Image (cartoon, rainbow, N blue to C red; front, top):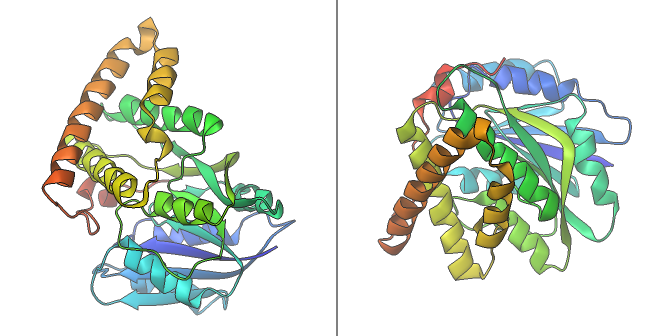
Length: 289
């Protein structure tokens, strides 16, 4: 199975070398990563310099530079335009895939009925006070996806469309396009990708409001409902998590999620645009590994 892998990056000098090495060292018994395309959007740090050093050593790696930051959807469209394979993988530039993640992510696409596959994001452990909430958030993401696939951080899909619209929730937008073609989504729970969450309440709320606003727009404009927008499913999953040890974390997490959704609803009704979002500084100052 040949595939093209796209990494969307903005000022990822502290992680871009790690993610490229992780991709180059993937287990590939059943897949062939024929090209790795980095789209660097408006990067002002050493991201481009680091990627160019990889390009000089490996012909599979290509760099597309967007002079100005135009949003992740715009970067994805650059990738879609040049990618040669029929199977595509999209990975965020601030993540690290486990050594067998790409293969486990892509092999379900051998099924003709499946058009998109989501991976299993796991946050890197740290001592920050918000980490238990971030960990809970992604644990719920995992458990919801086991019942109804949710897409984020890393996805693999069949190339059956040419471009996506400007959106703040690109993975779910792609899932919507795939499902509208009559294909199904799948959750590859063993396709693990490591990420790093916000470290401040402000950054967390900005993230949650942006995502919720994007989901509201997707629901209104495309009649598409992401798994996390299914209130009964989310509530049922949260209730199963409640225990004495997690009680404080769950209550605080619910409170922050409610605030984030209220802010996202405000942004939705008042036309706030999140397609080009401010990246929290805490994402950029920390190395994933």
